[in-house]
Length: 281
Ligand SMILES: NC(=O)c1ccc[n+]([C@@H]2O[C@H](COP(=O)([O-])OP(=O)(O)OC[C@H]3O[C@@H](n4cnc5c(N)ncnc54)[C@H](OP(=O)(O)O)[C@@H]3O)[C@@H](O)[C@H]2O)c1
Image (cartoon, rainbow, N blue to C red; front, side):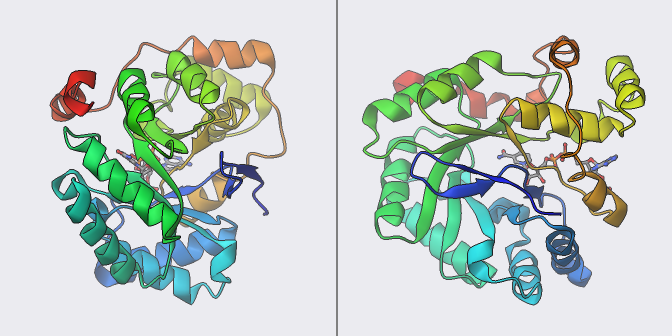
């Protein structure tokens, strides 16, 4: 299975589907083995973060896969506790060491904080020093993203946000397109919560695909990069078997109609979303 690529604003190529590594543990070689299985199945893009505490295992999986480094696209993220200029540079070095790599393909700010301006300056420096091939943010609203663009010397190339049929983020998608920012969807299948939805179930029957494949194909046709996570071998294969069918325009709209702007765990994220334009400019 060969996964197609698309270009970020700086010409760097990113696979159109990636593999999410949240909740996959370093312990008992879990991360190492899952990543090896994912790469063997055909994934070339792996999404981790210092917050996931599995960079070591992910890095080992990458090395043991025996796929040339330049054929892989590795993303990691700077966590909120490490915001600010110096802290971000230090956090980056630690991530690199844990992963056992000498560069990162995509480095992301995990959540915008009130220190985003300083954090972003460090991201730009890492990019200029060629430690990372691309830089971006996560969880930025339109307002936050536009504030960053106002002060940035190098614009974010990616915004990774919660996005799935219950949270379609149509306005954010338009703004990102205008600024040539690629959108990645985290929790692209809403951690399984959408699998009993009647519209999704009916489309799965109609296209003779699984519910998850319908959702991941919907992301693909929306030009959103999904990064589904699974520890399960059969699902690792299932989640990239989405390139042999096409959802019709009418059916895409049916999936869009599921949207109710729902967010996973709203209470936990509430404080992080409070960072306003005034605070970050
Ligand atoms: N930037 C951010 O703030 C942020 C936040 C959250 C997540 N992320 C990234 O996004 C990635 C994906 O999001 P996520 O892990 O939250 O959720 P997700 O990918 O939407 O869902 C993962 C869950 O769905 C199950 N699953 C996967 N494939 C399936 C299939 N074919 N059929 C049935 N169930 C299936 C998995 O189970 P099993 O593993 O048991 O198979 C797991 O419980 C993360 O791993 C992480 O890399 C980023």
